[in-house]
Length: 307
Image (cartoon, rainbow, N blue to C red; front, side):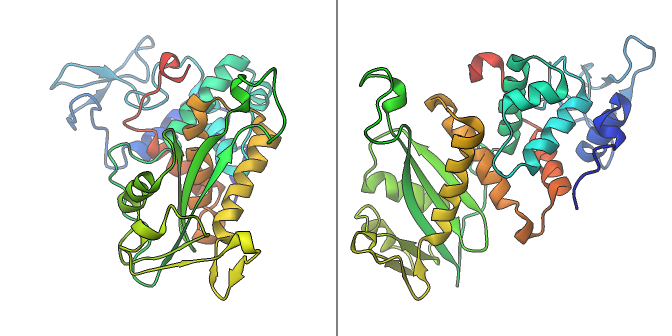
């Protein structure tokens, strides 16, 4: 099921506010400043949409404490942008959002990054480990940047630098991708594996020597030898993670075209989110968008931070 773009939440501000409030406070309004459940809606035209908390005396709106806070863009446009980013497999460019929403390119670019922040996993590392008994996790790394042998404005141009990305995908489950800023080695591989994958998992990699030592701590480690043109041996393959990388590369080349290193992790979070909430796992455009709105709470991203 896809969202009905004629839905009032995409065209009417009151409907958009009510939609966000219903999803954020299903049991009743609670103050994002102190957690009190005694907040009351304020009256009058100048304070329409605002709530007053009698405990902390703070004033807030449905946007307070979310990535939408302090934005002058109408909330119904935020909801439409969120739906578009949730439903576009290879992403949607800031130029397209700028034309579609009737806002400036700068605003659309910042809006997209704030929505990516809502797509990101919790910063406290509270996500459950991937894999587990009878489950297989594929691990591989790729390098994002200019094509080998193609130089952009001299050898020191930042576009010539390759950036390391390590991804872990649970077959039939989610994916997690990481922009690795330090040199990739066994220590880094061990840190990523141990922090994200259940020790009862079956680990599958290619012939890279980064993984045999840390993967020995898992129930099983198997590998295929790509250098010898071996790509599958029974159920031993990295085809799933290669498919994830393929979607990401097509999106970055065809939709976004360029990504600065400081923004790479946010783009990875975006593609991870859509893959981990794909149709085969029981999600659709509407439920993906709802999960983004849920993830928008408790997060902030200022222009200074993203710039």
